[in-house]
Length: 434
Image (cartoon, rainbow, N blue to C red; front, side):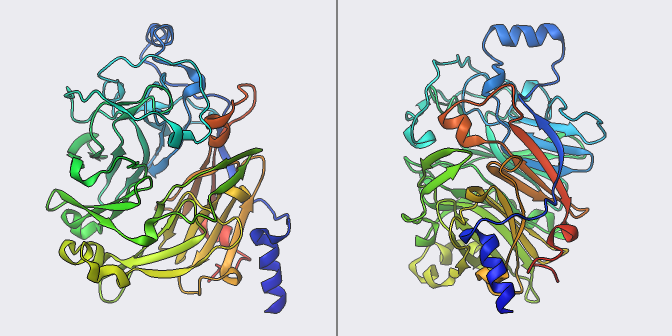
């Protein structure tokens, strides 16, 4: 046990350690390309500045059947389409992205011209306050800019649309922050819900969405939307078609864990609650919702029954219902986490270590129980998003985002990768293995 503990310490970043790579690279790009309706459409978009290849950075992913969804937030002007997919039947290594559900729904309703390049030291933290240019959408299915998405147990794609374009240039709030839901079997809009303005703050930034649903109770689905900028959580009930804001001290960042070194870029963030995972269904039909701030190494949890009781969770009485789970240790900052019901494992990213790690929810949350799955300073520079599909495949997207935000990506090098591995193979030989 003692030897195993010290081996774990070595692999958790206290001393450099090499492990056998387990994730397989599926797709990679130097720059993103899109499947345009025609060559003329691409040329026109390029000439008008509506498509600037170097400004398109993939960030979120999700898998449903033969579609692998990839999001491209509008950090800068010139993003061709924000919600896209790859047909997994492709044999191409660098496939062109197909807008979902159509080109039309990914077209901005107003002109957003490219700005002179600028590299703010704090990324979105130093970005200008967005100018309100709220526009009535011709189609409620229109997506302005999305970071993260999730498919639920009922074959619906939930999209968190920030409504923001050109975040790092001349930011424009084109629509309110919205939850947009699609029926994947019909490729049709189910609903668009605008998060009420009184539930957002001046510093609000919504970039993630996690769904709590069961296949036999589709109408009882809930969405949890963390506010990483203003340290809150939006809880949305599908049945009631309404939301409310939850606040808690555990949603804040840790001032000692805001320093990052990724891909040769040093930067400081104050991002609060960001990563969330819906845990296993318990005998009493509740689930723990695990969460952590991005600028933190600590993990917390709260029962979904608490979150779904608006009267209770918005009162001071709910404070002690939120629990500290444990600490990931030195350089344990993480962008995302996801629970895999087949293995009872939460997979999570380790951005300061170019790594993917794991923890079995049946074990204590300590260094000895954390497993390092893969670490690679070439292929896993800023692992940004991760999902587990219904077949037990773990999908990881790495995108060198700090270099994109603060420096400049090399267009002749591979900058974006999607990797995959089998859940049980990945945890083999780690403390996460059953």
